[in-house]
Image (cartoon, rainbow, N blue to C red):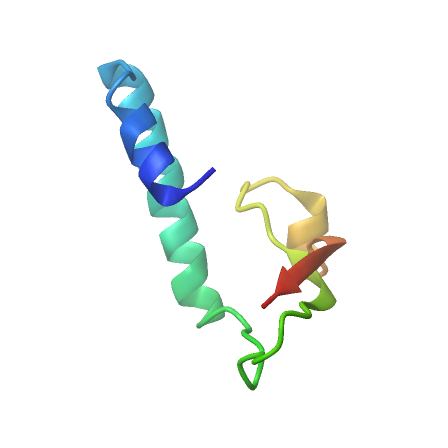
Length: 81
């Protein structure tokens, strides 16, 4: 889903759902500021071949044992192009 599609979908949500979305966005923004900028590939890829790598993520839930132990969830595969 693209950002434009997400923004369009927000228009159909109730006020309560919008508050839940905002709370999740605020929590993710706080985590991002704690972790710093997300790792990006060092050099942009000029060809059409994507670069794949595995990364761990943190879900942001206060009681999550995986995140509190420092490891997070994953590793999950990400593609960068």
